[in-house]
Length: 268
Image (cartoon, rainbow, N blue to C red; front, side, top):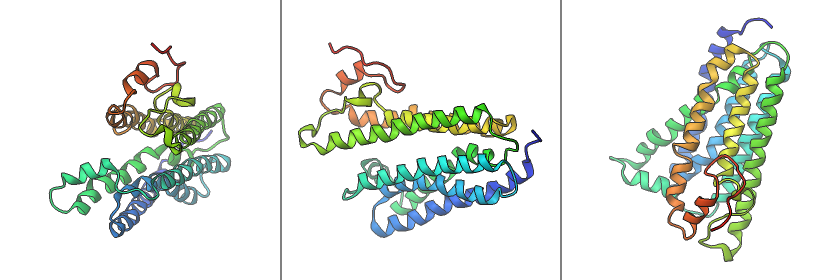
């Protein structure tokens, strides 16, 4: 395998960042018009898809064609599924309580505060977290075992996300479950199958970048940042602070793994 094309990869960083911020700025304009900032969550998956597609175009003539298509398709499939799911889930609802609480503390214009603290920050995170997707498309040489292992791990992640989301949607659709804690299916093995799925998706995409030691070194920050956000940042802790007010959550948490899937403990 020949050396990693640092120059070509570096030239891609700016267009990739432009794609991420363009998605967020367009979303911001739509959100201001509608008075609803929760739609930024829909833009999260679209932003990654845009970065992958821009990199696919920018890397023409570089890297391995099969790897370029593989990492783009995997990223787009994950990102678009997530965007569609969040859009459907939020249809007909008002502002997300998380954003309502944040914007209530805005020093001045709520919209400009949201632009700085939500949209631009998420644009920067999309660019940073997508580094394995960008780097993988510039790796010369054929796919190796790392790529196939990464694809398998990505598939596990998508399964946990898609199945977990579908199970939760069915649970919420039953009026008899109003106010209850979801503790069935994948949700009996982990309190956060969707976040665990995200974790697997991004470690899987990173493994594809591990076909090159240089690409792995420049992009390992991506799964580390995503893991921190999901486990210790805006993912699991924030949701559990909200869920803790529901009856039965304490008992559910006592018998169900907090993140990584494990057999449920017996009820006491």
